[in-house]
Image (cartoon, rainbow, N blue to C red; front, side, top):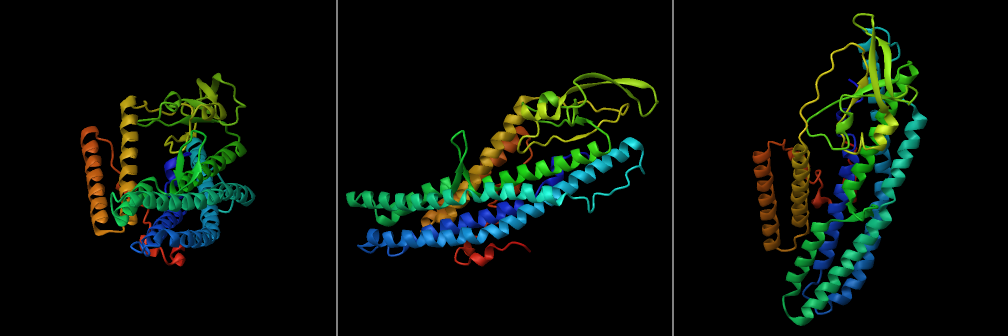
Length: 385
């Protein structure tokens, strides 16, 4: 079973779903308020009232999210830690030939560690709420200012300009976090990233703690096609979980023959991770070293494979962007155009897949089941079922 990141795939989805719904609700709130009295002569004046009411409504929406997000995060982290422990037990059974591991993964989850990591993750995710409120307010005021300024010139109708401004906003999405590189993160993307990072930490810690508890320290990193450049040097290599096994050659007993053999430790886990191994979205696993077991050859390394996958991620984001524009449409023509963009960008994905052979994952093109129709019913954010 090993320490395999694919084993926790989907654990962060619940948190992402909550924020995806919230984003579509905020987009729809903005579009509906901007459309109210759009043809009235005092529309701009009325928007001063609407923006204040929008702030109150958006703040209430985010307040209702917190307990749901907290429960989803804690559940995901507890499951991830249990998966890591179960993986370590499976590793030990493989090494010892079965029957040695007496404690099962069930009932051994460190609840204090889960609570601490869940609290840290919740703080990171909900700290974006103030930024979300600023983003919503800024977007609304900027749309009103743009519409007011342009309609004075008589270049286009107020409705057309409002739709153009909404399209620009929907393409950007609602953001709440800016990283050190200056990139703005969308609600669901950041929430998913933070939760996925924490679940990976929980699984890895559960796996490591169980192995170290049983007296094991050396693990081997997996290999797969299209690795990230920073991970490639560690594929198939042996690492020390704690750093207590020094880098270099070590003599161990071959489990098949009982004779001594030599293995080489490339680095500690901390050293490898400091250089990028187990980054967010990393698919590399690691498993307990079984001296003498057959080690598969790493697949041929082609840097273009990784670039092709990254281009696919970009194209998937473009499809999701067009789908947000559909949610922001206030005219039939705008909705028709946005749907056409969705189809065109999906066609671009099909073409890229056909040319490169990279695997298409259609669920990544969806808005995580976000429900724009739920914009006026915040109770539909409850996704525990």
